[in-house]
Image (cartoon, rainbow, N blue to C red; front, side, top):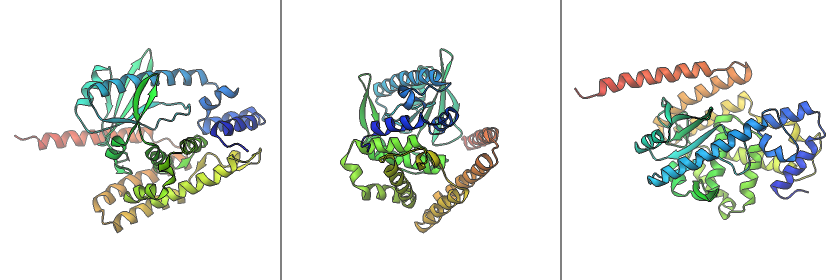
Length: 333
C-alpha cells in the first residue's frame, strides 16, 4: 500500500503502462501529468518542448523575483507546485503599486492586457519563446475575491530555487488557492491537483491539521460549503490512491473529474445567496455578472465544444474602450 506521493506516482506509472498507448497518452494529457511521469518512461509528443518551456519559466521566475525583492516590493508566487508540471505563465500576487510596471518594463516585459482591474498580463519573448506574466492584485477570478491577498503575502514562506529564496504561499494558503482555482475557475479536479494537495499534506504542517481555521477563511468569503465538497472528493480519491488500484479503478475512470452543468450552477447560486445573507450587496452584483459569464462559458465550451476566445478578446477590448472614455470624462478640466 503506497504511503508517500512518490510511491503513488510509481504505482500509477506501473498501471498506466498496462493500458493501450492511446489511452495512457490521453489520460496523462488530461490530468497534466506529462512532466511528472517523464522520469517513469512516459514520453509524450511535446515533452521536450514542455521541459524547455519550464526551464525558461524558472529562469524568468528567479529574475523577476530578484528584481521585486531588490525594489522591496511585497509579493508571492502563486499557482506553482513543487511537483513538476507544465507551466504556461508566471503568476505573481503583489500589492497594487505603480512601481511594478517600471520594474517589469526594465526587464523587457510589455503590457498586453489590463482590462481586468485585479489582473494585468505582461509578455516577453526569450529566444523565440513567449513568456506570459500575470500580475494579480487580488486573489480573485472575474473580480470575485476568494481569499485575503494581504494575508497571503504577509504569511508567505521562502523557498529556495537554485539557492535563490523566493516567497511562496504558506501551505494552508496554497491548499486554499488550489481549491478555489479548481472549484471556481476550472470547474473540475485533475489527478495532478490531487497529487499536489497530497504533497502539501505529506509535509505534515500543523496548520493543515486545523481544518476549522481553513473553513473559517473560506466562510469569510462565502465558499465554505464548496471547500467541504472539494475536501470530501479529495478524501475519496485518496483512499483509492493508497490502495492497490487496477485498470477498473475510479482513478482511471473518473479523473479528471469534471463538474456537471447542474453542479456549476448550484455552486454559484449557493454562493450568491450566501452573499445576500451576509448583506454583501456590491460583491453580490459583481458575482452575478461573473457567474453569468462562468455558466455561459461552461455551457458553450464544455457542452457545445465552441471556443469563446474571440468573444472574451472582444469583451476585453470593449472594457478598455469604456475605461478610456471614463478616464477622459473624469479628468479635471
